[in-house]
Amino acid sequence: MPGYKEHIVGAIFFWGLCLLGMTVFEMFKPSLFSASVLLVIAVLGALFPDVDTNSKGQHIIYGIILIADIILIVSGQFILAAMLGFFALFPAIGSHRGWTHTWWAMFIVPLPIIFLPKLYYNINLIKILPYYTAWVFGYLSHLILDKKM
Picture (cartoon, rainbow, N blue to C red):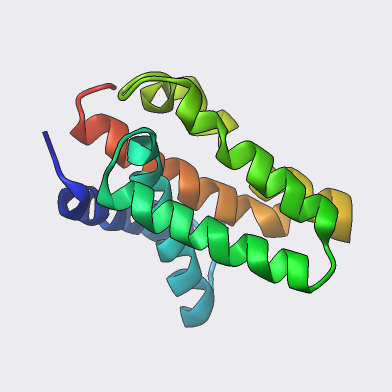
């Protein structure tokens, strides 16, 4: 079974292929900064499925959620902070390699990446789509490496 390092490498590989394809077909041309942010999102997507067990991925994901929640609370965005805390509880509902290791979770888990910026900041969906895609490709790499797809 691959560990977190293999999942990170898988995310880099899969997202690199996706980004290369989008660039070659002139669908998306990110700046170096945007490409770096997207790579981080793909890696987080690859680590997320193991958030349902005591793992390096769980520690990284929940560490980021904690920091994000603190920032949201300090900045007075209590509704977003509450939503983040609420959704962070869901992985505890299932067993390891349960719902977090399914193809449908790969598409549903990152939906807030699309809907929250649109709902709260009215950001164009086309601008948000690469972030969703990065998470999905990272998640896909995890499922393939774990032989779930």
